Amino acid sequence: MSVRGTKIEIQGLSQRYPTRKVPTFNRVDLVSPPGEALAIIGRSGCGKSTLLHILAGLTKGTEGRILLNGTEVAGPSPRWVMMFQAPHLYPWMTVTENVGVGLTFARWGKKEIAERVNDAISLVELQEFAQANVQDLSGGQQQRVALARSLVMEPELLLLDEPFSALDAFTRAALQKDVRSISKRLGFNIVIVTHDIDEAVIMADRAVIMAGSPGDIVHEMDVDLPNPRDRTDPEVQKLRARLMATFQEAANYRKPEVALAGAVH
Amino acid sequence: MSDDAAVSGVVSAGVSGNCISRMLKSTAGKSVHFFGGLAVLFAAWWLGIHFITQDPSMSQFSDFAPKAAFEAMPGLWADGTIPAALETSGYRLGMGMLLAIAIGVPIGILMGRIRWFQQLTDVPFQFLRMISPLSWEPIAVVVFAGWEEAIIFLIAVAAVWPVAFATAAGLAKVDPNWFKVARNLGAKPWHMVTRIIIPAITFDILTGIRLALGVAWIVIIPAEFLGVTSGFGYAIQDARESLEYSSLMALVVIIGAVGYVLDTICVMLIRKFSWHRG
Ligand SMILES: Nc1ncnc2c1ncn2[C@@H]1O[C@H](COP(=O)(O)OP(=O)(O)OP(=O)(O)O)[C@@H](O)[C@H]1O
Ligand SMILES: [Mg+2]
Image (tube, rainbow over all chains, first blue to last red; front, top):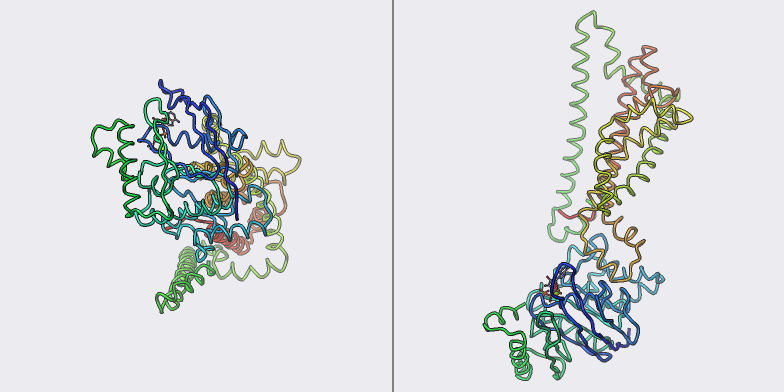
């Protein structure tokens, strides 16, 4: 398995829900080069999920456009796949069937599906559960199935909406590292939405901070750290502190404890 | 059913050594209940007739006793009454059920998926559902060319509502995120139906079919009282008119047994296609 990343260009993207006076965000511009892992950080309600849904083609922005390698995003596609906060697996399918479901939509041959599904399952280290009922898996294992289900499509861009926030700290840390290393190995882009500063520092090449009403990208920072990254590494801690400070400033947080509470998730 | 038991037996064998014996015990327990229940039923039947026939003026009722009924059965089988009734009633039931499923499942999906359709049809459907299918009989024989079609229509009318309502209820419980995930992975609208909706609600559809089959099997007997010269309903009517009460009771037993077998098959299918836990 190997794929190329994609150049993401968000051009003047606005979203206004008809029920709201203020647009959720207004004329957002953002470019991400092929293969980059980009983190979007912002406090709750600033429009991160909305932005990601538009990137995935699941909703349409009211203005502006998104280009992936120059093609405009007009709807969902196996080339850009979203991974959600919860696994949302199909309980009537085995692990293998869940992972292969996207390929069957695309009318792949049985043999090719089996091969690619096998690869994806190995990638997330679930070989021994390949034929298991997904209802028998732990939360972390289920989220790994969801990851494999996304990866099997060999997307150029993987969109992650707080994908690990429901998991325990150990599983979360392991999966954060796994996803990053897989993306680097295969070369696809990541856009991860999070309010966990740690997650951004561990997973991203660059972090942008979204804030304000209407929301906009108010700050960005390169996360220039060696791989694999370890939370306890002083370099990582230093960058984390800097990002946190910037985040607080940008998001106009008055009380530090609020920011800390936000960072837990 | 026994497959499941065997599989779970094998799986948990490593955990608890005497689970095989537990499984045997549970099977034994089930058959005790099965035969015990059957024995109670036949004892009540036998006792009832026994007491009624104590009165000499009621002695003609002895033909209704279990013994007479079971003695009549081989004859009914040999002269082709039972096989023929099984075939014709079975055919009508099958056709009626097929129609009910072919109409009920799509209607149920529309009810569950499309709000205005559900709102628009709620009153008429609840209204129609309450009308005994048999009350359509006079209309059905006028509308359809023959009694055969009319009976199939009546069965379909009886069976369509449980199927449609169970399908709609199942759909209402479907997690909307399953659709979002599918769309995200490139599913076409057609895939939503065949790959998500149908498997997600197979359990509910089968539960509806089980209810429908029960109703249909009840309705088919009186539906065959009129117009046709075949099927269980006709056979019952025929036995009554020729005063062969032992044959009549034998047919009643067969009707009950067929219904029981059909229901058991449904239960097994439901178990096989259910992904629900606990
Ligand atoms: N369908 C909708 N209709 C109207 N308003 C909406 C809709 N979806 C989201 N919003 C609003 O748009 C804003 C942005 O929502 P969004 O879910 O994108 O936030 P978020 O940054 O992902 O927040 P969180 O971190 O809590 O997930 C919120 O104020 C929300 O209430
Ligand atoms: Mg969100």
